[in-house]
Length: 112
View 1 (cartoon, rainbow, N blue to C red):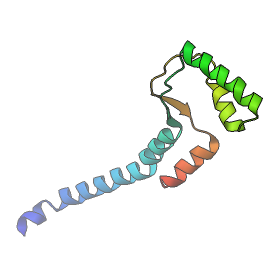
View 2: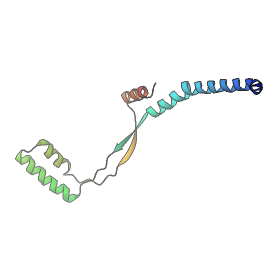
View 3: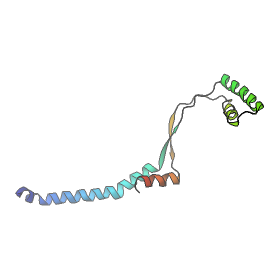
View 4: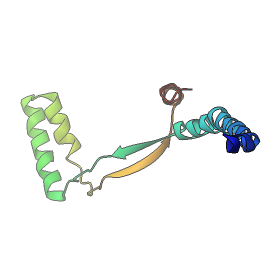
């Protein structure tokens, strides 16, 4: 008990310091970090298998037949979309700036 009395001032100073640092973190650093993290979003662009020249040619023929028959517009659209040659594209992530709505929603979800 006597040791506690000796260190009473040190214990009070450490407690006050922890309280001040905790308050600084909660009201200054935490909001700044949340705002910084909500300003940008990572978007994943899916893999595109691509279309070779041969596939594009076959799809072009299929599109012509589909449109001549009056087939489903969705099926014809897919064939038209794939009738142009394009290379393989691997999956990748890009970082984009958040819109105002996304930014506000992120702030609300994180408690600001």
